[in-house]
Image 1 (cartoon, rainbow, N blue to C red):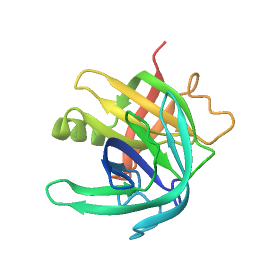
Image 2 (cartoon, one colour):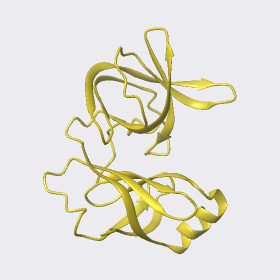
Image 3 (tube, rainbow, N blue to C red):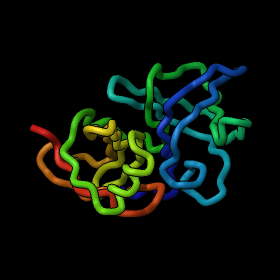
Length: 175
């Protein structure tokens, strides 16, 4: 799935601040999450989506640098999801799967997992994007797609680490 020219940020923490929220998370484009190099804000439709619900709002999203916390984003909005979620301007995006997967990591991925151990990793496939979660023992995924028919349940997919632009491995759902 092409992530260029769209906002894709996996939000892991939200703190109330003035008329909105400060969001910590992981951008998919290895820059600021806005889909363009060095772009630092977005004004327009924003979709907040997780495996339980979605909220569409029209607002401004901008980056912040908070000492000791690194890059964060400020989202001016009154409504917020209460757990980790995808933040995007792709209003066609739908949550398609949440749970355990069989994952055969590439050699590069094995090095990444040995270095960072348990963590979350933004990944891209031909039909969906997601967050690959490595617990140190097993792999889970939160997957999202804007494709009308994304067959994640029956098809194996090659994944790319979006932040490293390197092959991650092959994913299949557990049955």
